Image (cartoon, rainbow, N blue to C red; front, side, top):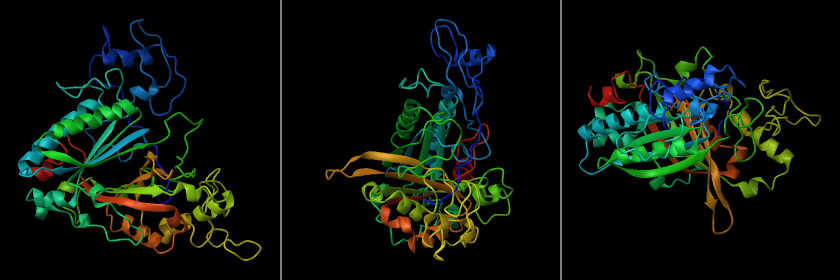
Length: 427
């Protein structure tokens, strides 16, 4: 749970397909009514407000109307802001399915993702779950696991960066909920839209692939706070203060595989690597700590995310500052100190997690925590060195448990007329 702050990227645009949203009015016309009257209540991430409309239909809200493009340089679901609902799902190819079947599957998945992200039905067998909703910032992202390449005869195209992650002493991994041939990340700002996409992707898998594991997550709904701010996790901490931002000059270099001059295979150009970890939070133990003890574990104030050395959330942490007794104000094993990029050789990763809560155990303990997803151009320079350092002495370690893990190669976005992974599967 490295401490970095989440960028907010607005990739919203009006839907450009005329799918029906009700009797007598198209999806395009419905979205158009929101801007026609000039009644705007705000402007954060798309058109915000309500506008006059025919009595037969109600204009989509700002949450429903925001659209993320499918055909882009980098796959959607990486640089967009946190979404309110998410599903992470891994598939294994079925016995007998190989490169040909995988190509057909990715073609189906890409077309379904394109349609759903535009607010259209998934196809002829649509379930109507999201019939009344707009795109709701839906993103669908596809990746390949280490085992995918041997199952498709593409071992020579497997990136070195996709080598299995090393073992960490804090791991208590469930192999059945780790890894996988294929990985899909689904996110949206409406729970039904996200479920609709999950169901469509699962159905599209057909006889080519079967679900290996699936996890459900959530974040705060956009607009729930009086201003944009770093999200809180289930420990109540601001989580993501020092995330790299797209405005930084070396952002692409740290997060995405370059189009040329890389040791990665050509099909990974403009792609990234996703590390996925299910991190259970031992909330009963955490909540027994005093506020001061919790802040010492993290190294930041719970109320506003400011470093214990002073200032605001964005003030640089003073690692050498001491108190009247000569003790470090930010403890030597504080999570925020250990995860700072300047304390890890500049290692950087873009964190884009979801919280999860999967019920209460028989002993009354919540099965809850963080679906940690981080993005980087090279996991051996991003996630691995930071996690190794955390493994050696992070104060937070006694309050969390890493229960599953996966590493996936996520190729660049599909160009118009292409499907995701086409350059790998047909190259």
